[in-house]
Image (cartoon, rainbow, N blue to C red; front, side, top):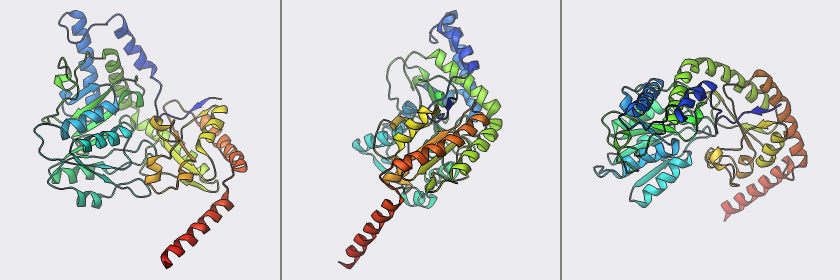
Length: 404
């Protein structure tokens, strides 16, 4: 059996999406900026996709949607477009320590450009403190950027309240919603969102396309310069087939959202409940304030890469952290931020369910994963007794330190 449970990394293109995209590779291959028939047909297809995305996220106008290459570009445009704008006199931005690298690396770049960035800590569930935000925000804060839900542990942040606090202080609110759009209800107006990033390949659309929602009336400085496409915010010939795919994926997601949430939540809870029966197992993220498809657990005395390879041999495909970081050997910055020790963080498994997963596949995972954990623990040099010895040495060291 082959069981794909890494939908947090990417999803297969829905057959209906693929079908709608195909004609724009050959029959309707026109440039959407041209005035003749081929161009007009392409432009109409892009406009229809814009309307579909607008409806999915509860935006007010189609012109609020800026198509681009995906979540990373959307995050860059939102942060740089606000913080480095010539008219922006405020030089302070707030984000969190568990953001996706597309936010964290951009924030680090902004610091080299004279922007002060505050990184909010999170609790053991991965939630920021609203009180911390209130303490750090000021009249000099131009932007608050906190993700809607974490890509690794699935914790959903209180974005509505974050947006209220930002607006009360005269700041804008951006959220990276790559993991939530199409997975849970997203309404930019109800959630007080000014800017929102999304990516097609997370909701059964094609890779290489995404969008930034920009509230009507906001001005951004573009990060790409050229022919002035997307109303000047994203120059470059439109990826018509990709945009059409994103639009169709958005339309499908809107129709099936609630039904999929119910199905995936039940599957997720079966996995979590069964795995927590294993000794020395930790659930990462909030138990209920989490994405319906996300199960992330750490198994003590197990090495994550070995776990993934063993599961791969059994046809089970998951990950040890975010897909953008799986080739790195250092522990996940998200798992460390919620208080896990390095050796525990390295033993994490993220399973993210999707549209076509079945109860039979869940049964297979529940049966096979505990057996793999048992085998790896029997082989492990770092076992429970070793941990207890190491911790006793640490306690002795701490006591000696206090006495001196």
